[in-house]
Length: 331
Image (cartoon, rainbow, N blue to C red; front, side, top):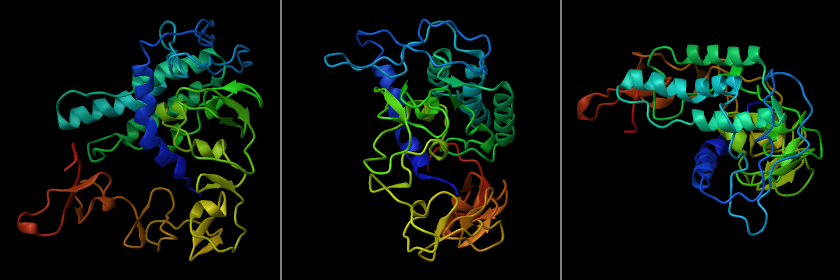
């Protein structure tokens, strides 16, 4: 089942995660950053034991510094290639479509943070998986009908490719650093945490994952859940049973959704079928209660939700309707 909660939270707070390192650039450093002086691994995708030093802490009295501090030397080549595809490539393609300069994008910050994690042997990258992600990004950005004020969507091939190497109990900066289904409990843009199993009860949904934000891993919560059940009202709660009364999809658990106020395992419908609780299968979206594939450039439309990017060139005089196409800036 698609998990949207963490993806939406990442979109809202990613900017904050990026600002922290910039604001902290002049901060006094009182403890060395783990991995900053470590010897780069000869193969970014090689499996290795985590660094015993662990991430640096912001101790009482210290000035605030980002959890992913300064990286020595050039970024890891594989990290730089992935981050260029996720951030710089969409900016370049959009600039080519709309004219003008590419403007600000987070490829450098992404490569810096990811390189710190790779050199600390906290995460691994696979050359094959990065290559597939880059190819998928290039295909998804073909033409200009994807251009909108929003960030270009991340293809499925780019999700889940930053793999954690830290065991339970290890200090961590991001849930992406934790192996298996572990979560980095207590981590944030300026705070390290500890790799732990999902909790049965307690607070949840209170922080942003700095590395997941800059590497655009919007579905990381599926592999690194915060709760054994689900997060409801900022607290962990048990999943509802199949057929139980529900108000939200997340309450039903992974692989289920809330349909007609009951938890269901029904498959998500394809394009052309009626929506299921407002949801559709991958590649389709719910429009007027029916699943539909996004319309291509030039097709008739009445609102943005019908199109791959936006519904533009509306008729003058207030008449409804337009055609699907790119939109370079917010109206």
